[in-house]
Image 1 (spheres, rainbow, N blue to C red):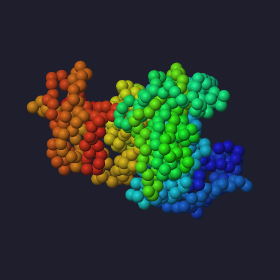
Image 2 (image 1 turned 120 degrees about the vertical axis):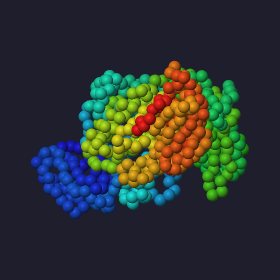
Image 3 (image 1 turned 30 degrees about the horizontal axis):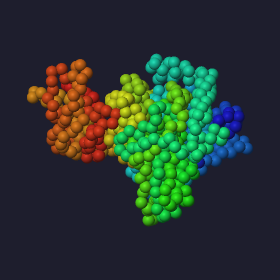
Image 4 (image 1 turned 120 degrees about the horizontal axis):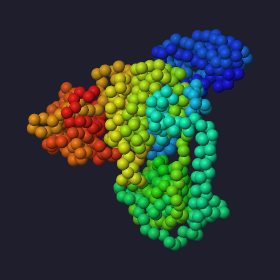
Length: 639
């Protein structure tokens, strides 16, 4: 906003949603000494401007649409289709940001159900700020769920909004501020960060304009040089044309490989660089006459794909599912060749195992699918030294708080839903204190010590590229569990909803249901609602030497054996154990008896302590899992 002209922040725009039953404040810029007239929902205010202006209106019930007009002299602004309802901020990293299109079979086919016009989402491009909190989010805008961009809505945010709308029968707005890969230190203010001296160096760099500019330029040049050298060294490319495939190079020198069909190894080659893969398949006359869809799972890291020499798709980084449309006429009757060039930046090129690799025809009378898993051939393009990743400026300390949280805090909301933690798994010991401080920081920003802050414990995941790397996921989950003691917070768990081979699990519908249960209880006062999974309130050693775990929130918990327990001694050694649930849990409490007797020196009990716990999680009657935990033997009433 410019103090010399009449303007509104981007979040005051067409199709916006304002929080019901809380005072309404509009603000913006205008020429100094101008009188600004603000009209909303039939009421007007005349307010002065010193370059900035602000106008207050009383709280309103849910409803709309309303119109806002703002005028100063000859200038006039109009915002239409404003609804009053429930507003939630959706924050964190990529699993909150993940769009509906990524959770659907194909882009553009995200939703088949009704898309309510009174669900709206606000989002804005990332633009980190390190010196002071902003009052606006440049180029932000609101979008309606019945519009053409529904597939780009946050899958979790949209599903959550749908459930809240269904329950309350009011409009729901989601202010999406999540940024993929962001660590929690990017989401706190300078005051909070000062409590954590380990970030002093990176914070100093972040505030240095020269450092950021120089680093970004060096990264850009370094990455460009790496790819230029790779492409020139790859004999499968025509170096004169840059990236044109040289089909004549493909005649000989191929080695056998396999597209993994389970949890097998999909490694290609022996290090970073480019690898070419080809797979022959046969098509029937009917398959050759129709447009098809190619799935190539996910690949490490980027790829381009051709069928019979015609390019059908490309993806620039590791995580998105490869879903490529194959136009009619590309596939031939009889023998066909699929060629894929994979570029890996850090380690060997890989097929991610356990994914779909196939060609399909989905119509009223679908044709048989062609499976592409199994034997194939590969040929090394060019070997390279590892490419160090670029510096993501938006991940540096305070950058996202100043540019996203701070402007959002200028408007009332009902609460926050948060999905984050994956990017802090490298230093899990520091996560708990920093996450608690972040919650306090956000509550200060909104001026509400009881602002509902709902978050999820990380989903199960086992990095299929670095299978032997300890990623700290269990320790982050434990830090998240311990933060349940912060009043007004609520934790659900996604530990049973993940996909071992995908950092971005698709089942956001069930996770949204779990978030909505928390919201109904904590934010909307349904105190008798079961919104939490079972969790321990005591771990004791009985006279018979058995360890017993007392659980609360266990009504409806199924009986039987529970795998995944481990007993730890004072030397730090762990041994597996199995528990058996006892009691009907009709009062909401249950006891798990550990079958393995305790030994002298046993000190700790943990459950589901793995990046990807391969166990069946017991659920209570609300369908919520017993979440991973770590407790001392002998603790009681921790919460």
